[in-house]
Amino acid sequence: MNSLLPMLSGAIQYTIPLTLISFAGGLLLALLTAMMRLAKSRLIQLPAVVYVSAIRGTPLLVQLFIIFYGLPNIGLNIDPFPSAAIAFILNVGAYASEIIRASVLSIPKGQWEAAYTIGMSRGTALRRIILPQSTRVSVPPLSNTFISLVKDTSLASLVLVTELFRKAQEIAARTYDFLLLYVEAAFIYWVICFLLSLVQTVIERRLDRYVAK
Amino acid sequence: MFLTISGLAKSFGDNKVLKDINLELDKGEVLSIIGPSGSGKTTLLRCFNGLETPDKGMMRFENGLTIDFGEKASKQSVDQMRKMSAMVFQSYNLFPHKTVIENVIEGPIIVQKEKRASAVERAEALLEKVGLNEKKDFYPHQLSGGQQQRVGIARALALKPELMLFDEPTSALDPELIGEVLTVMKDLAKEKWTMIMVTHEIQFAGEISDQIVFMDGGYIVEHGPPQEVLKAPKQERTKQFLQRILNPV
Image (cartoon, rainbow over all chains, first blue to last red; front, side):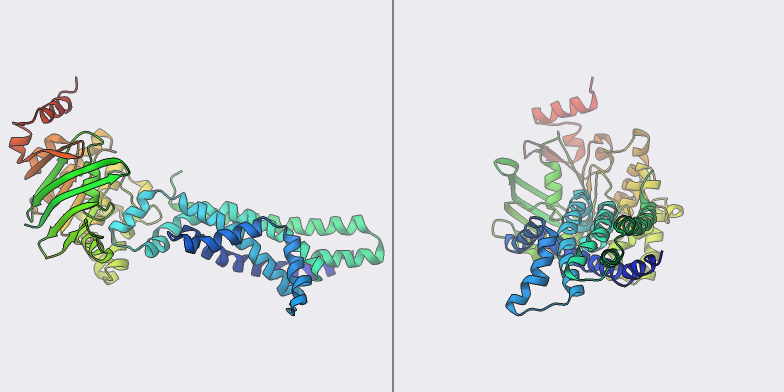
């Protein structure tokens, strides 16, 4: 059981911070992208459409490799952790932007109209009236993205981030206890994701206070 | 005249919804628009606060604001027009994530930059007026349709509009809840609010209106005081419509 400690420390030092940073950064990027896609001007929409299409259309692992192993060819050397964070932020940004866009579109047109008739601009209406309501709609799918992200961070082991799974691989390389170590790693991921789903329930309940049951 | 409209026209694609609308409205007057569904009455109402933009025609307000929709109406003047009016919707459109009082103070505080304390004080007085101050901390979904619509009216009044617009305010209500909303509207008419409403409550419209406009097919078919349009209609189409509404069987 002396493998548990290094794996937990990998989780606490890298897996969890990488997840949190990537999700926070990704959400900001997603909000910006969603707003661009909801803009009236095609010129503003276009970069957002291309970005989402490119990220969704290519494997995350390939994106990671381009950033960490590819960019040095043009003189851009980025450390493992920031490389991974950039890749995950770009990824979450693309997927979550579609969730946010759909949740904004799901709010009835009458809410926009009511906001306009009390004198609000589009931006104010979005911030004060639409987004607070669409947040509730987007929490379950965003939680999915978050939980996927926790597990996707294991890919960072391939760009030398010594996170949970890389720790497991390193120990297994010495002890040959592959089954035990990988099951142990899987179990730790499961516990983290389970705790996150509890948080999701709490947030949903809190946002549900104004909804008719 | 508070408001003069001339030659207003509006199409959605090939569908001409409004054709050559001319109207005059004095301060403190109540104007009711009646007519079959699809006649353009709601579209006309929505033109008064910029939710729809006419393709042609002029609107001239007493304060000098003039909008010529034939030229490209400036966003600025449409905004100015919007800020003169407030709208009550058929489906209430209260903000579900805000309590009753938060719904009422949202416009004054966020848009009109009123101090919170004075906005709350006015909101409470307005909720008192529509008989709902004891519900001020409830969320909209905890209220009946009639109560929600009265909050909708309080929210509109809180903006201190010069013109109140009502889009079929009782059409979504259960019959026994219509009365409480009509009572509030009747009070507003007595207080000389300038009001334009689209309604199917013909009898009520007759009681409180100074002018009745009967629309069909995008035109104003008949227009005048209620005792003429409702009691002695000249046009065959108006007679048919009233006949059908007042004696449905």
